[in-house]
Amino acid sequence: MRQPGAHATDSDRPAVVMANSGATVSYRELDERSKRLAQLLKAAGLKRGDRVAILLENHPRYFEIFWAAQRSGMHTVPINWHLKADEAGYIVADSGASALIVSAALSETASELEPYLANVSVRLMIDGAMPGYQSYEESVAEYPATELDDEVEGAFMFYSSGTTGRPKGIKPPISSEPFGTGGGAHLTLLQTMYGFSPETVYLCPAPLYHAAGVGWVAAAHRLGATVLVMEKFDPLRVLQLIERYRVTHAHFVPTHFVRMLKLPDGDRLKYDHSSLRVVVHAAAPCPVDVKLAMIDWWGPIICEFYAGSEGNGFCAINSEQWLQHRGSVGVPMIGIVHVLDEDGKEVPTGEVGQIWFEGGPAFEYHNDPTKTAAAINERGWSTLGDVGRLDEDGFLYLTDRVSHMIISGGVNIYPQEIEDALALHPAVQDVAVVGVPHPDMGEAVKAVVVPSPGTTPGPELEKELIAHCRSRLAHYKSPTSVDFTDELPRLPTGKLLKREIRARYW
Image (tube, rainbow, N blue to C red; front, side, top):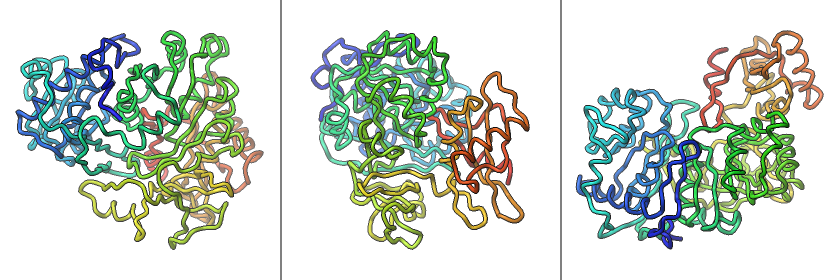
């Protein structure tokens, strides 16, 4: 377990290649630039345990900022660059960040952050400068590319996506490990399970503020891999990049799979994907039909994992295992899984309950002891708020999130399986299922659908989709109505903002 490309920090081998612009950062450049910024942060008075906030689009300089904070023993706070100024400012202020680094592309947002920056002593802007911010390039150039005297491992401090309210900061402790010895169990999993190495070419289509973006890239860098970063996901562009760069490893979410599968066959089957060795997906349960279609297309190289930014547990499954346990997200590799009822008692095998992890790494929700307490029970087990079940072989199946559950006539209904039933219907481009008010049943099941291009929404399509669900699910689970819309509120990670959809009806 090493610092980024420790065996290659004097190398001109690419550490980062930006997919659209072609901008490339070598391992030598990454190492030297991170050292300069670390020296700047130290000179500004920042110390171990302080926070460095990053408000950037997918940018080639993202990683030098992370590695500067990491080698300084600080928390890196990645901020979703799609947020409005008050939302981004809340994270800066709530995290207690002492440094904020933004880009000129986000200058409009940056100009509105002043009310939240009272405690931010270092304010730098990449690719330009404006009142209140110093030029990043000019500022770091003043410092030497030399190691700090006492380099220790820092940590990420991710903020949840805020799908149920204000985002919460996930704050792991800062260890005293010397820099270059971090990565822990996650790094070991990447090596042993997925075969990451210096020969790896890793495609990252995710936004870098997300744990599956910068977190996996950081691990790939520790192992000396070349990382190909997409500025924005595009299904056809993915296939072109895999062929052009001979990509060996890639990371997707289920909505990426759906969009690639719905490409015309002339585009979808045109490009060579034979270089792929491992394709990993996560972030949301994957519909069984989607997973089967991907395995049929790319072969048994599709791997899935279940985890959260909290880092409290990690389940994994490969294609061969999944074909024997269809719909599962795997067995625990970090932590022990328990499925509990509302009274905190273990449910029998096969029954649904809330998922808890025993023995995972410690974490807390920053400035929110109530949320921390709700996520950790009296036995010290922790939860992400998900619902699922275990089979007789110990494989975990996700049902949904506790907060998404629909209660209709006293019966619990989980939207995920209904969304899965509709995901690959040719008339459906995107779908969300929510509970809406009902005078007798309390809640009724409603599907909100984005029709596929060329499809005419209306009563006939509504009847077709309801019948489609009833042919696959119990009638009480099937939608009683379908609304059509032009777009669903999704984060760039693919996560649905269910509360925004529910708010339309409640």
